[in-house]
Length: 75
Image 1 (cartoon, rainbow, N blue to C red):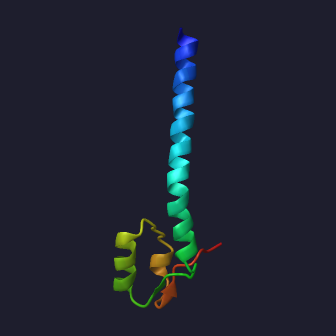
Image 2: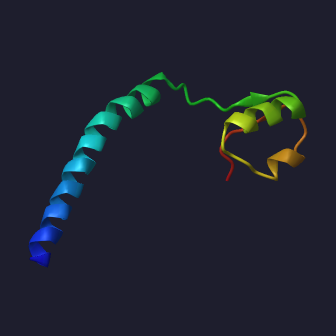
Image 3: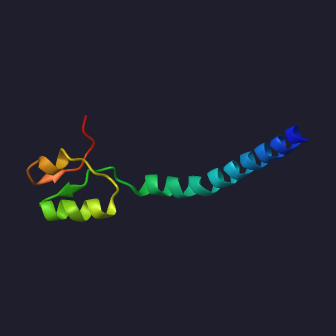
């Protein structure tokens, strides 16, 4: 009994994952197609704060650099 319940839940989980994958692949592909992959440039500390308030990225070392700066990937 427990094995069949486990298999049923596993099957539902697989189907749900596939539904999500089919739905969200279009959304992510559209985002990737529209993005130009350039770094976010900021000219002032205030502008940096505005960007960080809507973008969930925080790097203390970036807060110490002189402006203007770029929020590109750093090694």
